[in-house]
Length: 309
Image (cartoon, rainbow, N blue to C red):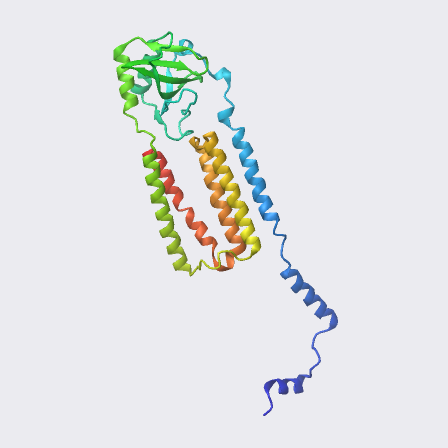
């Protein structure tokens, strides 16, 4: 029995139906389509972006405090207070308060009753000598309506209130017990920045992330194996994780995670880099869908920061 191919060959002939020039052009187009871009370009672009961001963080606004924007308590005592923030800190050599929304773990005050209270407190403060019995309690950053600001370390001693101007290193004692008691009560009413809340949130975020990843993999039939598409995928992932780990250590050593800008930059770079790597190497298997799901945790983080810290 004659096969179908034999019949076709008999009718059309076995010689190719395309000219030599057309065959060469088709071959050239196929080679161009199969030509892969240089894989080192993407890791280098990512590394360059991260290094640039780190340089911007190092020379960020918190390291560029203008001396002209600060004045002593005596000079500012008669000006109206626009707003102030407070953060729990018992370390005398560090300062953890700043502009509203700029630093994590701080309480902001903008109401008239609150701003008038601290203005009255500063007016009752007089220059004095620091006693050894005073201990650092909180950091207070105060902005006045004339645009000037002052960084104060709040000290306590058996109900006695005192401040130290961090810029001028001048120590002040508040000479009115009622005013001191009212301001101390306001500070003690704050939500404290504690690691218990952070740990609880971290566990909840991990659990939610695990459940979300599992749901996405099931929805789009995304397999966990193989973990890496090829050697380049593995190498790029290792480079990204190394940079993220080094950045995390650097941020912790310098206390940069207190600053909202540094926190969001690190989080954004980490999520976006994972997405780009998964999309470039595993988009056929829809692996980047898992990375997109990570963005769902961002609203949860925002809610936690603004309502629980």
